[in-house]
Length: 149
Image 1 (cartoon, helix red, strand yellow):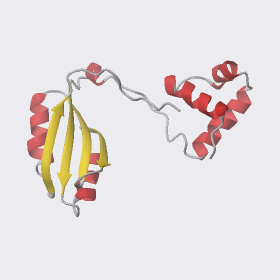
Image 2 (image 1 turned 90 degrees about the horizontal axis):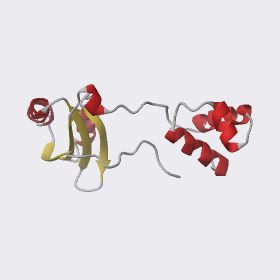
Image 3 (image 1 turned 90 degrees about the vertical axis):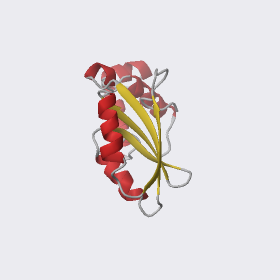
Image 4 (image 1 turned 180 degrees about the vertical axis):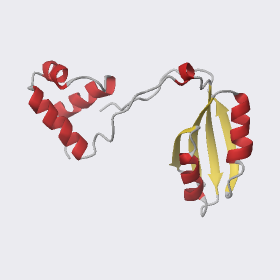
């Protein structure tokens, strides 16, 4: 699907406020509510919009420790390790990165005891992991909640 200027502007507005109504978007862009609804439905159908979601402040819901991990795996174990980690509710995101079979992972937990348990009992217990490097988040300056077009 080729995005035009209107599609890109709709996506920008929804990135700022995913609950913005068709009417408000239509007013902002000078189009009809029906035209906006059709364009958004097309963006959903073409999977340009994967899903609508809410961004939760992890600190406000008790997840006070945010840690990032680089996890190296044996090449034959990478997918199994990644799929297992992706199912873990403590894992906020997990990506395969370039490098020697490396996974990049973001973990959110309530405290350092939970982090220690996650590392020792859940992460190190997985077969095929060859190296783990971790970084604790001190302060967030910017977090992606959408992308700029």
